Image (cartoon, rainbow, N blue to C red; front, side, top):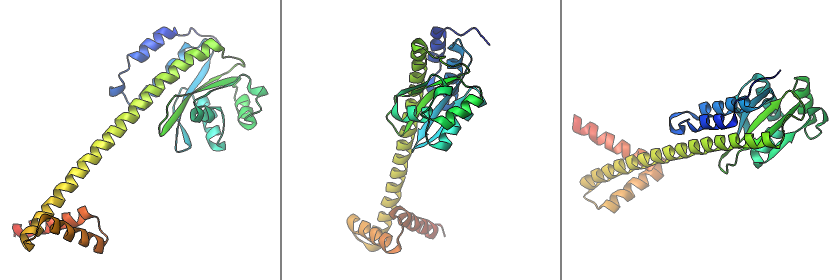
Amino acid sequence: MTHSPTDPADAFAELGRIKLGETSLDDVLQRVAELAKRVLPVPVEVSVTLVRGGTGHTAAFTDELALDMDERQYAQGSGPCLDAATTGAILAVPDLAAEDRWPDWAERGRKAGVGSSVSIGMPIQEAVVGGLNVYARTPHAFDDDTVAVLETFAAYAAVALANAQLYESTANLARQMRDAMASRAVIEQAKGIIMAERRCTSNEAFNILAKVSQDSNRKLRDVAQALVDRAAGTSGR
């Protein structure tokens, strides 16, 4: 089966038009997979593997065949897509019929009609790593030029993933700062209540809160919030 491939330059231009800040990571990775499939002159199926904490999952795929080939590796804990993702290397399987590194996986793929594959690690050094996986129906489907094109797709997917991680970490930091500010505010309120009731200093009020927190095995913020709530209830009656 033959088809008219998309010119790689056109595909890269289409990738460049994706606004990473306005598109979800899953949608970006799915677009990467679909475009990578379209640029190759031979029929292929494409997937994107992400690995977090040693566990892999397929974030995007163009056909159930690619998903099945990935998931077989996850179940066995090894295979080209996992190894490429965790090492950042390019792992080619020129002919599944002659593959001896992952024989069970290769045999399953051969029976499913896969002749060759290539997995390209994404150059990311964070909590999540990944790889672009391409499965062809014919053996020896990937020459050096093809791999070079696929490397560009993998690099773009890596940028999208890095941006998503940066956004997530920035959002988490902002949330932590808001929580910290809220905790500080309620602690200061509780200190003011104690200072008014006990006629003590700010440091003495804080030490009282800290002792109650330690004795009751509760967080300092929770102790302070309970005191503020009690005072608010008393003043409201």
